[in-house]
Image (cartoon, rainbow, N blue to C red; front, side):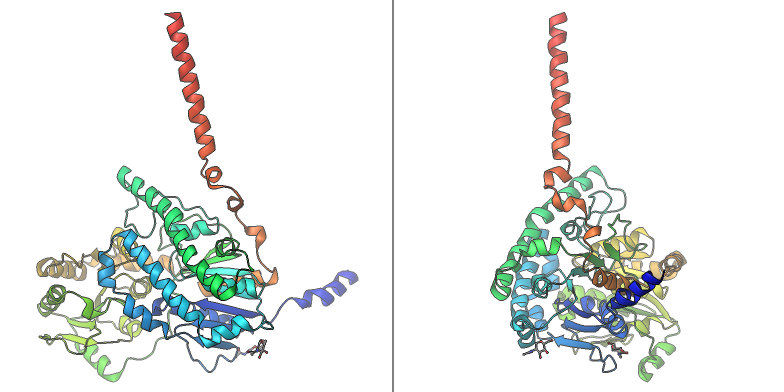
Amino acid sequence: MLLSVLFFLLFGSTTISSARILGIVPTPSYSHQIVFRPLWKELSLRGHQVTSITTDPMKDKSLTNLTEIDLHFSYKTWNEKINMVKMAKLNVIGFLNYVVEVGGYFSNEQLQDPEVQRSLNNDSENYDLVLMESFFPTMAMFAKKFKCPLIQILSLDGSSYMYHSIGNPAHPVLNPDFLLNFNEKLTFFERSISTFTLLFLDYYHYPNIVRTHQLLVNKYFGNKYPSLVKTLKRASMMFVNSDIIFHRVRPVLPNVIQFGGGVHFATPKPLAKDLKELLDKSTNGFIYFSLGNNVKGELLAEHTRRVFLETFAELPYTVLWKFEQDVLPEKPVNIIMSKWFPQQDVFRHPNIKLVITQGGLQSIEEAIYNHIPIIGMPFIADQQANIQNIVDRGLGLSVDFNTIDKKTFKKIILEVINNPTYRNKVKELEELLKDQPMTGIKRAAWWAKYVIRHKGATHLKSAVLDLPDYQSYLLDVISFCVLVVLAVGYVLVKLGKLIY
Ligand SMILES: *[C@@H]1O[C@H](CO)[C@@H](O)[C@H](O)[C@H]1NC(C)=O
Ligand SMILES: *[C@@H]1O[C@H](CO)[C@@H](O)[C@H](O)[C@H]1NC(C)=O
C-alpha cells in the first residue's frame, strides 16, 4: 500500500500536464478551418502549449497558450485555381486529378512560408503530438521530425481511401464513397459502381495524392524518414468530423473517433440593428440562400443567375442572398444581397422559413439545429452525399443547378416551406443529434491527451495494416473455394461419363 502510494507520487504525477501540440490544417477553406478552432482552443485552455498552422487564425488574445502560424496567403492560389462551377462539371477522375494538382501547388507555397521554414530547420524545437488534416498531407512529416505521435484529422466525413489508409474497413454497400449520391438500398448497378469507385480511389487516387506529396516531403524534409504513406498508415488515430446519427452508420475501429455534430457552432451574438429590423419586418418569413464560400456568385452561368432572380422575385418572402458580387442587375426589392451574413445568428431568427445551400456539412448542421428545412443544390465533394442524405431523411428536397428552371424551383421552394412534414422531420432529427454523452470536442481532446500519455496508440491498430491486400480482401480464400468447386465439378462430370 505504502509502496504503491510512493510509486504514484514518484511516477503517477509525471504524467504530462502541459504538452506541446502542433495542429496543422493546410486547406485554404474556411469550412475546413472552423471545425478545428474549438479543438485548439479546448486543448490550450487545458494548459497545453498549442501551435496551430492555419489559413484562418483566430487571433484571440485571451488564448495565451495558443500560437498561430498564418498561411492565409494560400487563399490567393486556391481562389485562382478553384472554380467550383467548372469543377462540378468535370468527371470524377478529372475533378480528383485537378484537386491533387492544386493541392500540390499550394502545399509547396506553404512549405516556403518563413515560419514553417523556421520549424523545419530548428532542431531544438519539439512537440509531443502532431494533429494533421490529411487531405494535403506533406506536413504530416512534422510528426517524424519531432519524433512524436500523429493523429490524422478530417473536417468532413472521410472518403473510403482515408479510412483504408489507417486500416479501417470501408464496405462499398454499407458506406459508398461520399462522391456517390446513393440511397440506402443499392441496386446491382450501384453496388458495382460503388465497388469500382472504392478500388479506383484506393489504387489510383490515393497513390496519386501520396506521390505528389512525397515529392514535396523529399524536397522539404529530406529523405531520411519513412515514406509518407507509411507515416499516415502508422498514425495513432483519426478524428473524423462525422456525426454518428447524421451520417450513414459506419463501423469504425477504436482509433477512429467521430467527433462531429455542430462542433463549429459559435456562441449566439445579437444581429446588427438594420438586419434585425429587416428580418423582424419580414413577418411572412424569409429564405436564406448561400452557395458557401467556394461557389462564388459571379461564377454562376448568366442563365442560372436569372432563374434564381426571377424565381425569388415571385415569392412572398424576403430572400437573403449571400452573393460575392457588388451589383446585381435587375435586383427585385425582396432580395437582400450581401457578401457576408452572420449565418448562424440569422438562422436563429424566428422568421426563417428555408435554407437553400450547396450542401456543405456545416450549413446543414446549422439548419438542422435551428429546425429549418433545406433545399440542396450540390456542387462537389461530399455535397452530393450530404444532400442525398437530406432528401432520404425527408428534411428537404434537392435541385440540380445545371438544369434548374423557374417553374420547378418555385414549386420546390413552396412545397418545402408550406408542407410541415419537412420541418417536423428536422426537429425529430435534431432531438437525436443533440442526445450525446459529451461534446465531440471534449471527446477529441480526451483522446488527444490519451495519445500523448501513451506516446501513441499502437495497441489500437488494425491488424489489416500488416496484411497484403489480397489477404485482407480474402482473394486467396475465394480463389481456393472456386478451385475446389471447379475440381469437384470436374471429377463429378468425369465420374458421370464413366458410369454412363
Ligand atoms: C496556459 O497554460 C498554463 C499551464 O501550462 C495554465 O496554467 C494557464 O491557465 C493556461 N492559460 C490559458 C489562458 O489557458
Ligand atoms: C528553436 O526552437 C526552440 C524551442 O522551441 C526555441 O527556443 C528557439 O527560439 C527556436 N529557434 C529559432 C531560431 O526559431
